[in-house]
Each structure stands twice: as C-alpha cells, then as structure tokens.
Image 1 (cartoon, rainbow, N blue to C red):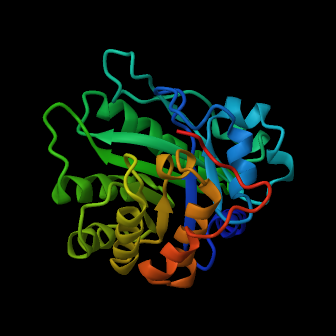
Image 2 (image 1 turned 90 degrees about the horizontal axis):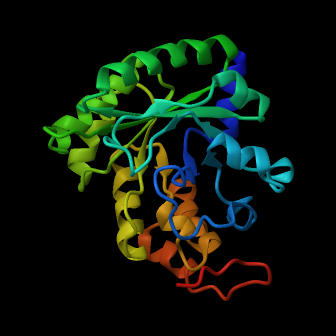
Length: 268
C-alpha cells in the first residue's frame, strides 16, 4: 500500500512519532484550546502531527501552511450525555481526505456498554482506510462500568485495535517499563502512549522515557502540551526523548530556555 506508507512517513519519523491531540473540545471544552491556530503555530516544526475534529480543521487559517501532519478524528461524545463512553462516528474517511488529512483516528472504549457498536464501526473504517491508503490511529481504552483499567485490560484493548486493522494504537501508560512492555508486545503495530491528565513536567518526561524504553513508538499527548505555559518548549523536550533518545535530565534543560519572540505562553 504505497499511499499508506507515504502518509505514515508524514506522521512517523523513522518509526517514531510525537502527536498532539486537540480533539477534546466536543467532550468538554478545556482551557488552552480557545485558539487552536495559536497552538498549531507554536508547535509546528517540532511536533510530528496533530489530531483535530473536522470543524476545527475546516476553519483553521494556519493548517494550509503548517508542516506538521494532520490526523482527523472521526469519533465523538460529550460529557453531558448519559454515557460519555458511547463514542459515535461523526464524519467519514472521505471527508477527512478532503480536508487534507494524512491519517484518521477513532476512539474505542473496550468494555463499555456500547463496545459492540464501536468495534463494528472501527472494523469497517479500517477497511475504508485500506481502500484509500490512509493510516488509521485507534485510540484504544479499557473503560466501562465493570472494567478495571489495569495492565491486562489495557493489553486487551490494544490487541482489539490491532485485530480490527488499525495501523497505530494509542493507549494508557501502565506505570512502569516492565508492564508497558507487555502492552507493546501484544500488537505487531506501533503503540503510542497517551498523555492523560495534566501532570508535572518532570513526571511526564520520565513516563515518556520509560514508555520509549518499553518499546513504544512515541506519544499522543494533548493536555500536557496545549495547557502548558509554553507548548513549544514542552514539545521540544518531548521530541528530544522520542527522536533523539535523550535522557530526562537533558530534556529538562530545554524547559529552561528563554522564550523567543512569537513563542506562546498560556496564562493560568
């Protein structure tokens, strides 16, 4: 699949990637995403790709000139619904392609009450992606009323994504090199670490370093980037670990850099 290989190279550099998801606005608008174009401009040339919903991509004034890859997210639900874990498909692969997407992404909550519908939809989307030669990033989580998120359930969720035909899987970090290594080994496709809730910079860098040592292909980190006081600097630090195999203490030095003109600062 020449098309898929060429598109994957736009979001993965030598098999590694630094993705910044900014698809959170439908679930519940978070601080930091009031002006997505400002974030895009700040991290362009450092991050490999971003994840956006179709409306944000459609109305962006910066995307046409951006160097970073575009992943259009196909799934959505809101925090106001009866079951926020019930992710629904709200656009098509074809529409994502028309927006200039290099890849598409879907969200699946394995173990939720709507799991059956979600995996059917993703299975079909994977086939459509194969037809058009566009990569599929599957955000696979173990979530549901009776589901305990642990190493075994996360492994299961990742395996489901692999079996359904995804090209890359994003999932929760399990807390240690040894445990995440088990997650990575369960799928024969790249596995990237999700960023999760906002945490301390050093803890974030340590987790990312450990995930990479466990065999992760990179990260998909949202809140810890777009809610950072300087998104560009934290992305530069993450890039050092992911693409340059830097140690945490080396990456931390980047965060001490003096802001350059045009760098974005997010006020608390």
